[in-house]
Length: 107
Length: 120
Picture 1: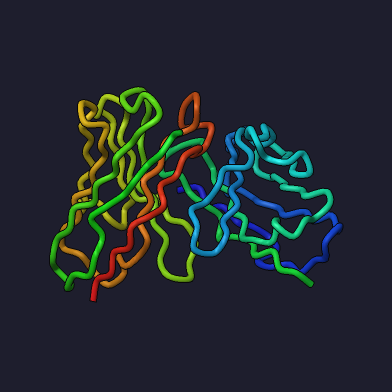
Picture 2 (picture 1 turned 90 degrees about the vertical axis):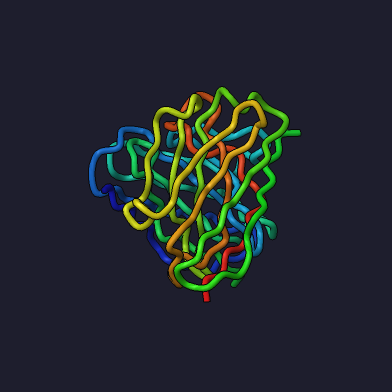
């Protein structure tokens, strides 16, 4: 199985900050990487697919990059509604696997 | 609106069985692979199972293989998860979810609200 490792596990930041979350796959997954946002008590929401394709309705302050084994989710200017937990997921092969999550907290 | 609505969760004892259902609407259900993904209390996301659009391709996580069965009824736009020999570690919120707009490479683009299964 492909292991997905996110870093950091948690991060504190302020409104307006730029934040980057990284995700590393244990083997090459090409660009088949998705990012999700999850708020407490809610289902995950797909933000980015295929490493860098922003989903409809997702603000442009979110961006994704990377290929192979190393990927990054960047939020250019944090807004209050962005404080949540973020997960990466490899979509290259089954079993699909998720990173352990990164909790983004307000400083 | 595209919607997935799970039902069937509840409290069961170890070793018992439970069947989850997921009613889909707002999209052509029969055209997409469907997933079950679970989340234990305070933990991350764990993929459980997937079934191809026509019901022919099925995969399970090792943690549930031999105990859970995924199925779908395209005439009823409904996805199922039959869970047997339940264990305490199966306690989680179970999400029904739809593959991305093109195929599974594009992530999971629609999620239900989740149904809670407690094994105790």
